[in-house]
Image (cartoon, rainbow, N blue to C red):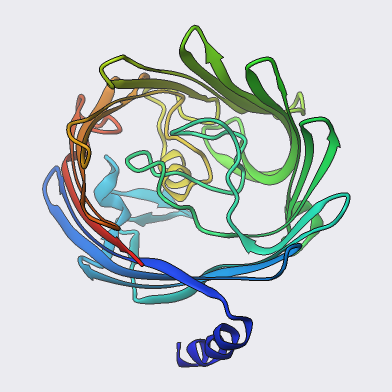
Length: 377
């Protein structure tokens, strides 16, 4: 950490970088079937941005994050299984520890040439039009309870090429140890009438079904697209990414819509289908493992996300979120309250209550509470 700070000081001084960021503190309580977790963190994010010329931008951020409370979790507390067999041995515990961290989340160079823009380094990437799920975003994974929270940077090379009026060809490469394990994406972004759309192709080293309710990893080629626009005062969006190999048939689909009423009430809903998810009554340990790790975007196949939002005052807004597993008929109801307490200071309070039959996805977690404060500088 000391070496990193020593390195950053001359960079800030000699490049005359703009410095901004935020301090954030969060406390969480999760009540499970027979135990509870109390945990949280303090986080300081410092962003640096320098523009040596109109065509060049160098940016990055360093994060300091210190967890507190329960810092060792057991994976088995969050699944309806007491033991599983792996390589002939019974496993009854799967711990994960959280430690103090200091890390560079983003550090990248963006240059603008006459024919294209180039971004190289660990950079923010966000693909797709979905709110809670993004099948097209093969680089990130969202938290359903907080889908708009910032995502970690991705080590990538990105080239954006204008190819026609209001159309852009976007090429992204996330390198890995060998070419087949590297993630690649190419998309053509354009618009038609009141809708923006994209046509996408990509390849990735991805988990795929092995035909026995388990997964293996292999190189796959994917194709799909997205759209977003407005029709009759309703916002509409959708996206899909599907394997192009007839022998490895899997993929995801999202469709959503929203509307804002004259009184300011905002309503939205989004449906998600993931063919890699488990079918009802056929959930295995593998399904839980890959869902929690983000290798698959859901535990089962069919989900619904709904949200209502209303500004109570100029400084206080209230949200009500519902996340439902349509396969096992379990769901979470989560009211949220957000307050712009002072200039550049926000406070949020969330609660989540789960409903469902025994051993369904959301039945494991009974009650959750979250408190977060963030101060920008």
